[in-house]
Length: 141
Image (cartoon, rainbow, N blue to C red; front, side, top):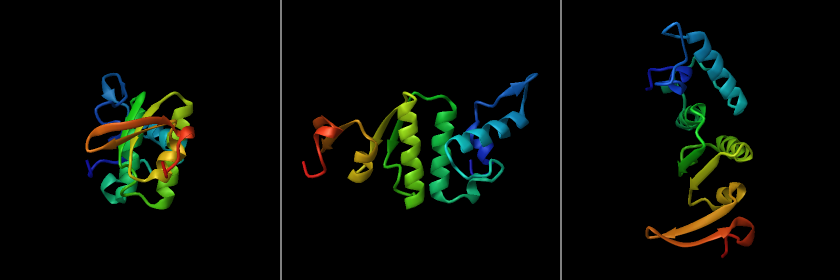
């Protein structure tokens, strides 16, 4: 996938067509609109392989959202992100929550979890220990 452009990657397998052919103008226009919507300053024509790991990960999230996903599962999504990219991701997740998109956010970084969650489930050795409303708990508990 690193040879593809950002736009091609976002719509891979879900390309808009016109008269049976891929509508490349729409691919790039829609990709630019999605990137702008999520406040990502990425050129849709850039090669994915030329992006840093963090930006590649954000492109993958946009790819899932382009398919109008209603549930997003993120496992340690900020591991390869810079602080600025983390803030962008958290803002995206907050916006998606307001649109009714559910996010399952798996992380050891409690500050991130508390910043975006409604409920927190603590797992230990693969077992659920407790589920609490975020407002009812803190990192010390």
